[in-house]
Length: 173
Image (cartoon, rainbow, N blue to C red; front, side, top):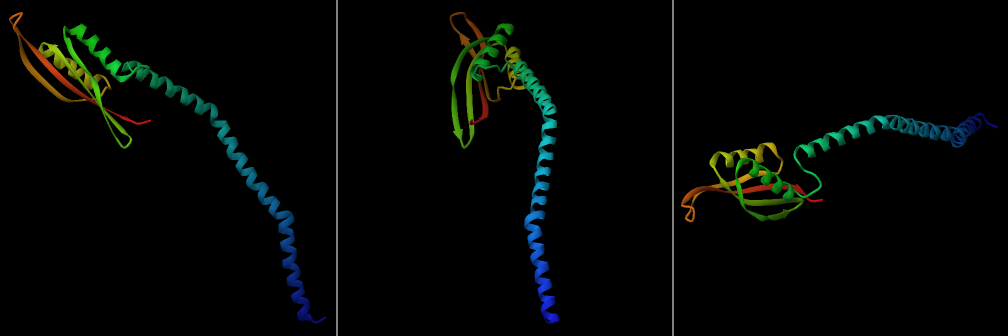
């Protein structure tokens, strides 16, 4: 055989032996290496589960404390608002004369609810209530406050009446 053919045969044999080695040995080794890396990642995730569980428990306690602080329990926002108004009205000698069903407007994924209610009482108590609603609770923002001096002809006295419009935004679920 000629030296040139021997060299070509040698190169072809070498390439063929590389291909056979890759198919039967190297490919399985590389696959096992990938599986090992994947298992190590899963092991790291499983090692962090107790820590993540602890963090989630802390977050749950924190959010429960916020809900308790702002009196947002399982009932609706409207009920919570009415409860807060009633409690504050009793403490500060105010009268809630009307509480109208909320107006709801939906656009895209945002729901806007407007609550309208009327309160009677003295000026300072009404302002304290408005401050309490905006700063100490998370019911929404006061978008309109109309104060009007009214006359009670039966009692022959004057009183102050406040019409309040409160707006709340929420995401559609």
